[in-house]
Image (cartoon, rainbow, N blue to C red; front, side, top):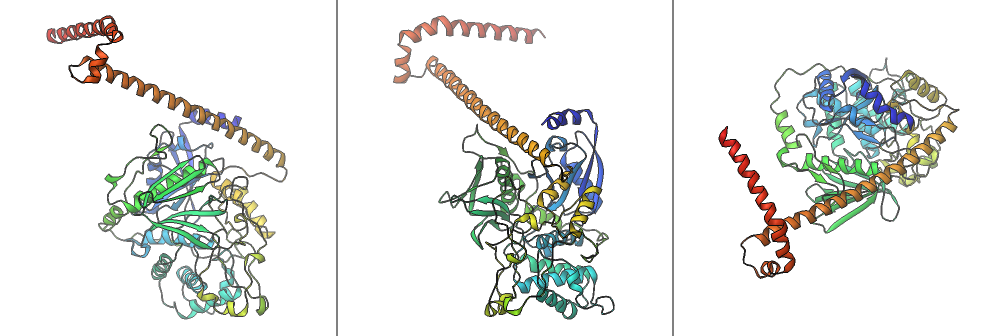
Length: 565
């Protein structure tokens, strides 16, 4: 708590900050920014570095000390948004998924979206059939290692690469067969375009899930896609609302409400924390404005509550999807050079490897691929605040099937498993410091998966706790809980004060209005009765008339000064 209290003073003394942004190909861009630099300045620097013009689809994400993710607001100061001490660490990610990514104007934009969707596929956010999974992985192979070459690619070469949280040897063979026979001769650009065309047809394309609970306490994941609002629960999609059907998004505390069809439908969900609920609400407001509106001039400031004096107010600042596509059509320049980062075998690069791969099992117990959205969920908070998810072993995550079920497994859509293990078991870390990389490497060599807490700490640039840090961790947890209680009390006091001030202001305005009406020449029975009361006559002669003469005198004095000048 002391470090947080001092961090603001330390930042105020510094004129420049060091900032590191992790790009989509896992390279890093480091720069120095001024103390009062806004988010737009940093974003423009990155886009210039990438030679990117279609930049409205992207955003910068960071993690605060409480492990809550945020999108950097470009219209605000960077230093005021960051709650951690410098140097700052952030990530470049796709914020608004293009409705038709394969139709993007420039190849550099398609390549960056390709990297994002490949990341979604690996982390289990993009659900698909087994046949679609094999085709997507084969396109990745073709785009990044080129045509199949028997001299360079021995038997089982696809097993050295990790495309999904988990996959079987049968899927690996299918990936190799497609890569060997169906994709020969395709250039990286063509393979990436075909990959995007395949991915955009999937039901969970563009999903960045937010963990919540429904009114019955059941875990659910809320997401915003280019086509609407989605609720994923259990093993199926339980709600889908198109953007033109969503009329209002609001939140209060941990409660998030979605109004649709002129208030005929109200969906209510509960986020893990008030901060997570506010982040969910802001993401919804931005996505709705980006995909639904025709022009950015139609964007309005949105309030999280029906009462204007209560809740948060937020306004999306940026162009909408239609304007972005119109602007992209006007781009005329030589295509910029793209430096593609080829695939590296997972066995030679521990930072890519993730957990054990499924080995061969008896045919009677062969299990189909089961890609779960709960696996590798990047937007979950730490275990103290996340939605409870039952953790099981790697083998138990794959539901056993009979021969008849396994035969048509390739024709069935992958679902969200009720038996999915904890998300912290399948998250690919993105360390930004040497000690973080060494820790990730040592854990991968020992076969231990990296946790989601470590990924968030690495993105936030905060040091990781060692083995002997249990006591410090407990002490920090106690401090955080005490701080959160103080913040809740402060929010309640501010809310009460705001309500009191607004009430007093309204009463004062009403009193002034009543005085003006009664002193006017309006001949209304109600006002005439008020004028005839002794109290009004006393107020009129003792207070109102002297005050009116004083104002008239002052006005004449000011008028005289103006005339003399």
